[in-house]
Image (tube, rainbow, N blue to C red; front, top):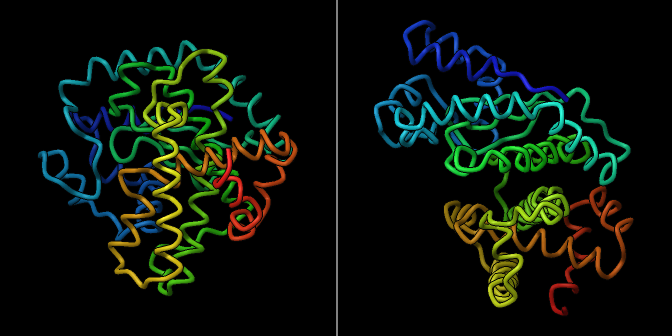
Length: 291
């Protein structure tokens, strides 16, 4: 694994009038961003980026308070560079344990400006330096590198259909299951490292370590599964339940992996990654109905 700052450097040069937006869009990191948006949304345009920089709401989000954050972003870049070798060792250690048959050596991590907190696909991880948790605590950048690297490895093992291909109720249920498995394991991947270093303030982990709230989320998760199985929803409704603010796929996916570890051991956790998502849920669903 390596970290390349070329995408961030180019975007900062664009902000200073020293590079063009076309050059930014043509950079490998931003090509990955465009590919991600094509896969999980309705695409992205040059105009979306221009309008986002004007403060408008567009599919190229993640630019809030950018000008005010620039000094902190530059400090974050320096912190990442200072810790780069140690962080790469941390990431390698996690995946040599969790996914020893996969390799992260050909993954490039691109700190960038804009878009999501992090995305991982096509052997690339793109991380938005303007995300508030990163500039507030650079350790979060490390943990989300691990999170997004898991997505890259998951994509090597499983096919995730483009969102536009999902049309039937059974297809939406399978899509939901994919995200439970994929996002659940991505939240789980840095969990033990976070615990060792007492870095558990991210919102997902706050819920995971709050028994009352996690039980509320489990109830919502089981209700969502029942809804998907019994009702045909609209496109927007399906997306709300899969990607919505309760983050059920993230939190209950991770809680399910934790319960697999407690009930069957770490080897079962590792094997679970290779199960088809529908099989993964059908095999371990019962763990959500008992503590």
